[in-house]
Image (cartoon, protein in one colour):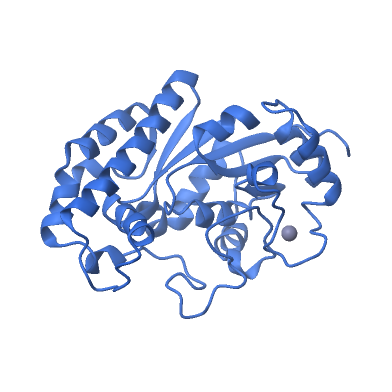
Length: 278
Ligand SMILES: [Zn+2]
């Protein structure tokens, strides 16, 4: 191990397709910060950093990997090992689900990342029901309902866990973050008493210009095809507009489960607007 540093962990909790990879890549540009991505895959799937293309990765070195894989899980040392090997003061993790943090150690602070349920459910349905490959076809009521069941189950699990463990939590709405990037980035940095100048903000936000290192993620930033929706941009996912009928869009917004989640998150600090008012 290298010198011991006093480090903090910011854990992202959110659903698949909620924008956690985007957010952690941006936050990896904060000073003295390492982005672990979905670090549980180091032990669960024997993965390392596949993003930078270096063999070996200069951050996720073989030495660090070995040390992590030798820990007995659950552990209180996971984040310390990552911090000391990478010489970081802030660790950003997108391990996303409470059960991973129960094994690897609870974060000092959590960002509960919430994407517009219409967009999130559409992403899930696109993956789940991809036999209907057509990109202009509406999902059926039954498919949307299954998406809602998934959406609610995981939000409930997250909120129950945050309450039970009394973890300091900030709620961030993905669409709001995209619309107010510089402001929200400052607010997130301030959680850890980091103040950013304009250049640092630009550097963080233009993550595709930096060498990135992280574990897992749905896609590679470096190898993303330039025709893809999110290529070198931070934008709001509006693809759901072609996949949900007007009726489905409405049903999601007024669904009782969505209201319950909106209500329960009011106990946390919320960055930006309250979606329940939309
Ligand atoms: Zn790397």
